[in-house]
Amino acid sequence: MPKNTAVGPKRFWKSFWYAAQGLRQAFRTEMNMKVHTCFAVVVLLFATLLRVPPGDWMLLLLAITLVLAAELINTAIESVVDLVSPEVHPLAKAAKDTAAGAVFLAAVFAVIAGIYVFYHPVIDWITALMS
Image (cartoon, rainbow, N blue to C red):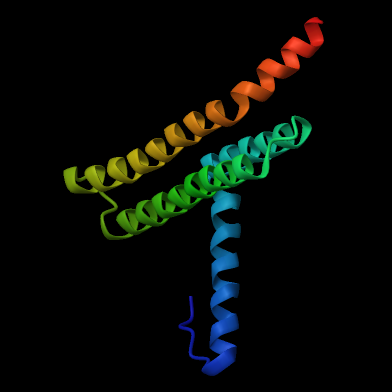
């Protein structure tokens, strides 16, 4: 990839272009990025249907952003490790496993946040169906 040699405002806007390229690359090549994005869309549709309050929307958006950002960082770390250590090495494995652990931790937080946000709306919906 060519170095960003632009200056001033052009350099600033070019940085957004590179970031968008990174998102596109991760979504195109990483199955987990696709899975996390699909879950995010389902969660947001579900929140819309259940009319989740604004504060809870913020918690959902935070959880979704955290998971997707962790997945992007994990992808970047895996790519760099594969570049510098194409052979199997214990330190390469440790770096990749640790990055994957960060995604797992973010996903666990997202599940807990989802339970917190959706518990009462789902109970209310079930109660309304039964009455």
